[in-house]
Image 1: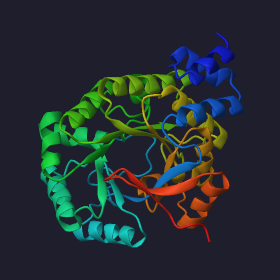
Image 2: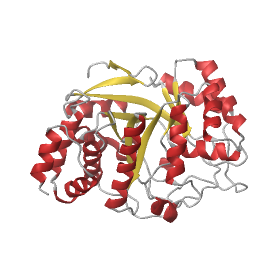
Image 3: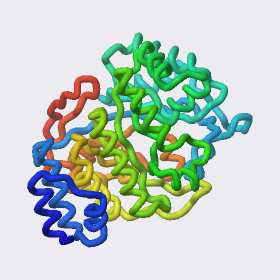
Image 4: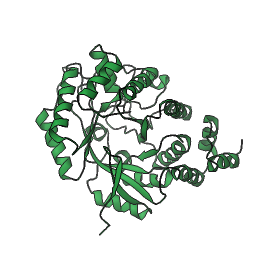
Amino acid sequence: MQLSSISDQVAAGERISTAQAQLLWEQASDEQLRQLAALVRARYHRPNECTYLIMRIINYTNVCVAQCDYCAFYTLPGQTGGYVLSRDAVFAKIDELLSLGGDLVGFNGGFNPHLPLDYYCDLFSAIRQHYGDRIEFYALTIAEFMYLADHAKLSFAAAAQRFRDAGVRWITGGGSEILTEAFRARHSKFKYTVAQYFQAQRALLDAGLATTATMVIGFDESIEERLEHLERTRRFQDETSGLASFLCWTYKPYNTPLGGAEISSREYLRHLALSRIYLDNIPRLRTSVLTQNENALQGLLYGADDFDLPVEDEVTQKAGAVISHDLNALLQRARELGFEPYYRHVRTQQAQPVMPAS
């Protein structure tokens, strides 16, 4: 199996196998990966354009019983420091985001056994009623959705319908990390299985909700585990066509039980490129400013076409992420790399031009 024949396949618009993807990872140069990723990117997007969002993660509670060893955020029930945000506090965070020009909110907390399903449905209904279409929100992650359904003794289908009735339109693919059973046994044994994860995601799609694919790298996972995650994601997209985007970010090891060291930006960019080449059926590939800061914009050269400008995410900040609020500097960096950024509205999926650089 030669790199040249794989390159010819990609150039011809043909799908590569998992074995070919591993060969690319092991033998292709950075430049070869970059060029092949750019070919796949160009099937969906103009080469000199990119899109972005200004968004905020609202960490509505830090109480969680999952006990993942890569998390620096959670507090067990009954421990000091646990909290649940009031509705007023949530609205204040949304108002601040709107004042900064953003219109996307994500909710991420944990498996809090003291919060019933009604808490979430009432909160999301109130947000939809108060803000209408001025904002869009990602209501929780799939992992949290699964816990809530289980806690309420509801099927995934019934829980998805409850959220839809509450005005929810999106639940992200968060909580996936690395979708192999071996990884979950090592690091998050109280989370659900990989099969259950995809069952829940399929139920969300069947209920008419939108969802995304995510991945986190840089723990102790092997290349084989990374590729298994990508293969499962690609197969699910083949079956459903329901994944709007794929976002990959990197593990932050600080203050976590697992510890370890951060992977290099180069490894992250190579993985982005490999993901773009392999995930030939997902239109949008997103690079992570939250965990890679300005270096994330290099991802636009490695197959990514979209990124967040995050205002807050306490989960990753507790583990060492540093958020820059100099949004214009980040946009200017995209321009310096040869991409004109357009603001993307999640609700309409429309992109609008931003003001030219001053």
